[in-house]
Length: 145
Image (cartoon, rainbow, N blue to C red):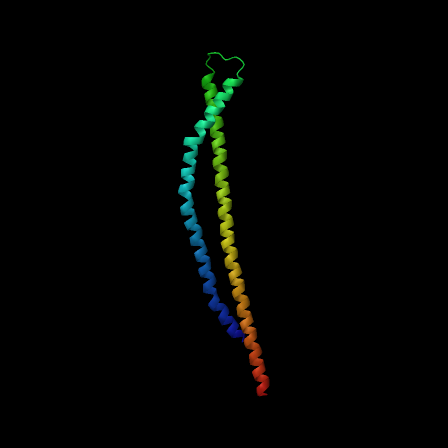
């Protein structure tokens, strides 16, 4: 009976290995799918949101300027505004990338957990079958003796 259980365990090993390979392939497919979309989102942010934030910051600077005069400060203000917009864009980009990374980690851990649970259920099933076979063999032995 023990050898039967061992053989059953050996037969289940390829199933667990195959589940691991499938999970890895799905994870890689998700990365191939998401990478161009993240790249596109980053460019969309640079092209659409950043100019609006820049003009909003410039308007706010003009409103709070105590001495609105024609001076040579505007290049410095434009530079600082550009730096502020760039910093904001960088923060948004990194946050989105981090959220995506965390989501992918969760997806991978879910797949890993699923494969582990499947392997555990298979092991439990094999153990039950082995126990049932052992009990039947013992009953048959008792009947014969």
